[in-house]
Image 1 (cartoon, chains in turn yellow, blue, brown):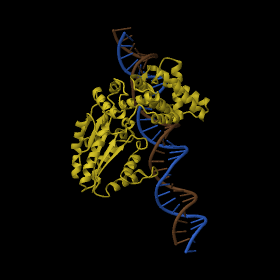
Image 2 (image 1 turned 45 degrees about the vertical axis):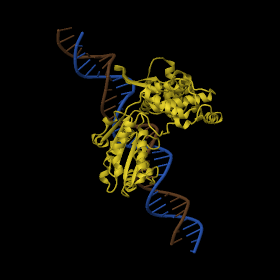
Image 3 (image 1 turned 135 degrees about the vertical axis):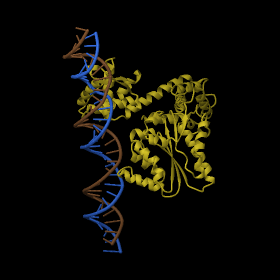
Image 4 (image 1 turned 90 degrees about the vertical axis):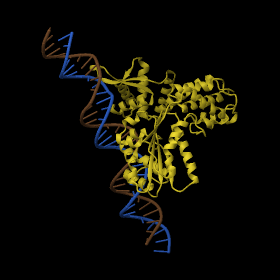
Length: 404
DNA sequence: GTCAATTCACATGAAAGAGACCACGGTCTAGTG
DNA sequence: CTAGACCGTGGTCTCTTTCATGTGAATTGACGA
């Protein structure tokens, strides 16, 4: 977004780097050689998937746990170990493919998931234009072209259900019966604990032949994880006493999310670096915590399409004017005025209603459906942007008004 | 006073349209031998 | 004769509209005490 400050940031950290030794270790994409507090789960996964080493189909596996509890990390670790072991004894063809269903370019449709899978398996599919059935056929073709064993790891598998339907997974689980040579084994990962309940029973039983649960880390475990990485990532002595503990405590409060803890630590370090401090202090953590929150919100606002921004602007205006909670009708009216003033075609109330709901999901507003008896039934909307950000948010939207 | 029907102002769902993008196969055109 | 330009058809995707149905409780009005 603001390119300049990002560039500055990079230059500075190269220029007079007093804080970091190796920042990469704090990036969420980094996978450590050793995973703390997950040996139990990793052992489980390994023993369930072990049959593939003999060329047999393993049970379908289902992993669940909240975000940042090491699911992805663990499965990738096991995958790497399996592949490493395999190389020594290459008597059959094993493929382990990891696919995150939530990535923007992937998610959403059956077509794209299949296309992405095909691409991972070395095929070519155009981004659009083909009938879905054709892609499906091609998928089967490419899988079944030779005798092999495939392990499909589908991360954030709950997204598939939400966006597409049960049918897709159902087809996937039944794939084996359509294949003549190849066998396929599915590992589903979800951070939605209730996900299994909404699942079609047929899918559920076959998808979760085996389950592994990832409990959240507690503050102590988080601390150990952070400590281990911090030792490598930071220069000696730059962390003030209690910094790690505080990061861990913050993250533990957010259902033990290790990724969050690492982000917090990294951004604290960056802030310290930028403010030319030689130490990362407790204050930096608070600052970082705020920054993460702020960036998240402002970024969302900025990248939202125009109509969404109009709606949000209406909400902001209204909630600034009166302290009382506001309702769908108010927002829609003001929104229409706004469109009129800007000579823009407005959306229908149906659509605006959906937009409001989407904002709720993004966490920018809080919404509750209430009934005022004969006064009707509507959403009660409250802005969830911190007060000190409202002005900034408004400005962002105003700026983007002026651009067109 | 009580109880069921009514009514409001939307929420929520389903389906379908518009417009952008794209692949594929067929046809046309121009360049080549 | 053939490679490449061009076009029409039919597909997906996203955002949106249209039409339909659902919904929770205040209000109403009939009813009985």
